[in-house]
Image (cartoon, rainbow, N blue to C red; front, side):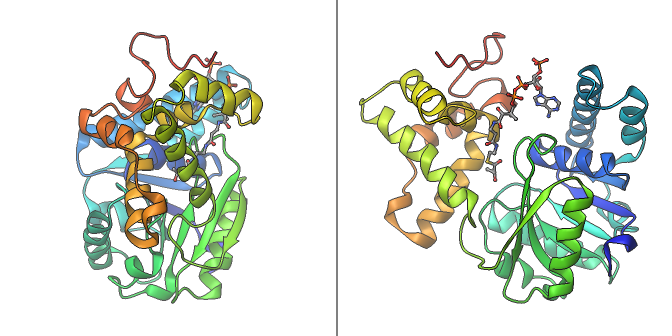
Length: 295
Ligand code: 3HC
């Protein structure tokens, strides 16, 4: 397959990353199917795409006609067979749990056309292990976007042990068609490159607060203004989802060892269901309209 053969992209999972990836694909002119397991999930993602496209139009980053045309290219679907019937590429963005993703790939393999490439947006999990539950491990790779996908340029294109070069070339070209900058990651290791650096940074920030050495505001102020990162560590955790960072750490801890032990401050937030912006509350309160206020 060549990138010009791609017409339809199906995105599995309509959460933060899934709906953002679907939006980026629609803006690049592809027919996009957005699929989740419940109508309410898929509708929420669909509405978020509409919100985001309108926001970009408001800010003159595209015309309202371009926003409307992109939105028209997205079809929300719940039935998996229907969702993937025409798919040339499936980009999977379901929760960051090996068991959930394996179940999805088993079902997907039974429904997808033979030629379809499977690309996973996993943040950390083994591409090789996931690919081995399908009958097409050579047409399976990582395509890792960053949050929010519509604003972040980087895409890690990750090779599993069985991925063939044609698949990596097509997915790299697809990322470019989507206006992104792909970086090929040759080794399928936990967290790949970015999250291997970024998630331990969030974890260390949490350990500093847990040990009483500094407050959330002090840590965020330091990372944002002194280290020059675009967001404070806790602000970023709220942006990507505290659960996402926590699951990445859990996996890195399991595979790479104790240096990656998740801080209890993160697990407490996950248990409470305060996962960041998406739930209205994380380290900061978004429900009150206050949001992140890094001093
Ligand atoms: N679509 C459209 N508009 C959006 C949006 C979206 N998805 N998300 C936010 N906006 C809007 C906001 O509503 C706000 O609008 P307003 O000005 O009308 O209130 C505006 O965009 C905010 O943007 P600003 O222009 O004020 O902020 P910046 O342009 O300075 O930057 C940012 C925003 C690009 C998110 C920047 O803060 C940034 O780069 N942050 C770091 C993000 C990052 O590192 N992401 C990677 C995380 S790691 C990851 O995702 C991997 C995963 O596997 C864990």
